[in-house]
Length: 313
Length: 313
Image 1 (cartoon, rainbow over the protein chains, first blue to last red):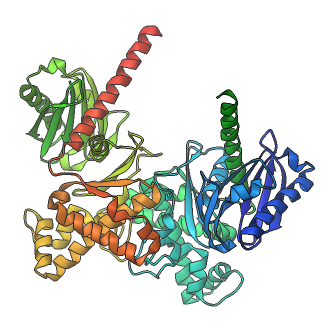
Image 2: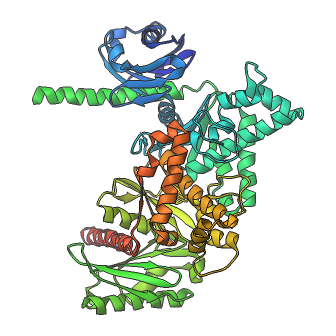
Image 3: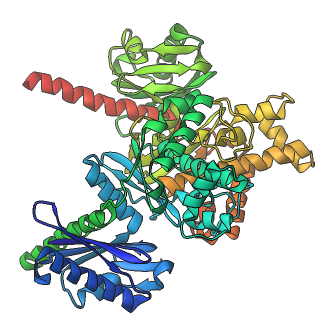
């Protein structure tokens, strides 16, 4: 059984993959705050999966964990996962203390990219653009994650697309994230609410000036992200996911309309047919947890080979 | 002998690579206007190289041609090379009519990227950013050109980084090219001159307001291009070349200063140390012609393998 966990700020989305790559169990548990609570929640999730799927934790061969923040994938360490109260944690080793199997850790957006590619059945050339609290993308080429030289591949949330734009949490002005990141949007909206983005979409239709501006900005930011991914890495498809995509077709239509509009104003951009190259990850998609399971399973192979090497060496 | 030609708007930079990969001859000839004249100039260049290097054209094993415009590399065709008066030309076939060897055609910026990587001796993870009349980049990963899904990898000149910026030839506003492309800069300057960019740098130092604005824009545009290449494809190094780099260290210092300034305002950007990851292609570098020769030589191998296949098939 290969377990995949998508650790979010409030809950863990967990699934178990059977030998034939089908999802045999899926469940959700609450996430804790701080190192020990996160590790405990990971074990809670695995236990809950075992109950759900009717298997023993002894049957777990590998665990893959997708987690927000800076991740040292090779070392299984998490750095600066601020939403979880984790500043530096050797998560893989901590989990292995109670469950001595192959454990791999990956940034949650990168894991989701891998999972989205797997779910599409075509991970030849795609990017997964996550519009969550922050904005980032994962690039999948020929079935594998594109890591780049220093781990910043796909960090397009902090590309400035407006020198006179709002100040970003990163210190720059007009970052893509200031337009279409949930955190920045909520701050710019400033009226509270459980789902500011939903309020913004609704009130924009009612003619509220700030809502109209912010809604247009969301489409502009997401369209800029798509343009950037195609004009630099040149991926064929951009799959869009993350909290903001709970808006569904209303968001998709806005972004596609913006891309079409840009294409009408520029033959160069028009020829790229960007509006036809975006897809929305369906609500409730297991992409992130599935990608985490795949990362864990890949680690299992490395693990076994090393082990075999030790026997023969 | 493997010949490489960098076909520019006014001249062809030509070189011949010997068996040990050293440049045995290098020369320049004038480029013609229109299909027939371009083909004739290619042959002139090869003839001139043969004289220069003391070899017979019969010794030429392959010809690689780097040329501005949209290139169908697989088919050896050139589309929309507007600076050469070529709208659609099967250049490889046309050259082979008089010299029946392996002939490959590549976009000039992509060829230069390959050549720059080869000259650096490290083409593991780099981009070549060309600041010429237009702006584009070529990405080289693990020694090979990164082509992407539809051939737009590295076309960052047409990423908009200012929604209120000047209108670009492509129809969008505030494209990177409007800031640091020679054509757009000359139009915005509007005072003529043989080397507008040089005038702008000089007069900016004398306090001319338009010159100050445009000079700052050049650094902003180039810095935006570097940021984009690192935050999407995540290349380790960005080598900057093209006509504008005739300014040498004055340009390099401006771009590095701008990147440092952005890094001081943003811990995220600062940690990337972008100012330390740029290099200028030296004046007179044979990168583009060398890259073309490598493209031609690679084609030679494909050619031979296909030939062998036919014998054994």
